Image 1 (cartoon, rainbow, N blue to C red):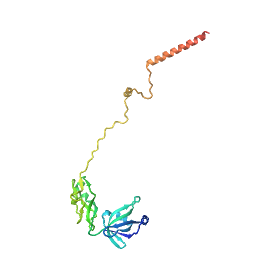
Image 2 (image 1 turned 30 degrees about the vertical axis):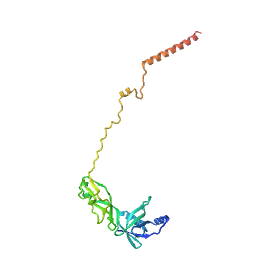
Image 3 (image 1 turned 180 degrees about the horizontal axis):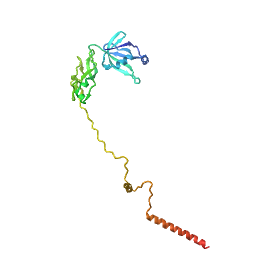
Image 4 (image 1 turned 45 degrees about the vertical axis):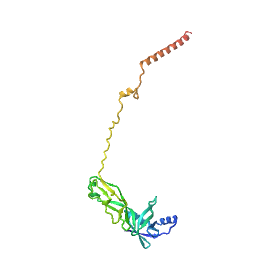
Length: 250
């Protein structure tokens, strides 16, 4: 069981709480049972070490409050949005004889001994946590699921997990599934369509049919247009000669 040192705090305003945090401490409160709520402060360094441990929220902790020990259960943690440091904790006081509803994480072991997983099967986890009703003095830290000898198609239900004495799931009336070993899924990729050869150009005949010409070529005018232009120039020459004749006679 983990343990922590705590001191009683008498902070009443936000300014006093912020000053406490600047000193490297985390404000917390202990509630539950017949006793009044107890305001305490903890070392931020110790809190961060405990939070990093597995299943922090389901582990009972012994808090030493200035020489007086109390067993508590972490119920809520508030983190700073910028630094991600813990800035407040709520603890539930453990009272013997009482019961508590709590979510317990599920842990899977011996995956390398599962024939189904060895053959490419997939562990399909339906529930990573199970809500249980248990005595405060007998709270499990985790539920163990053994995957040894499980083949494809196997289903792990709550009835296959051994629970401590007087511990029952809150879901009653059905044997709900925790996980299954499913068959591998094969995804068939669609065939790629055939691509055309890059760099192909339309044939010259196609260009001629469209009425377009290639760059750098000279278009030839029809023979009829050349004849008309020649006749026009001949007539203009005759007019000029007629205009010059009277002048020469004088």
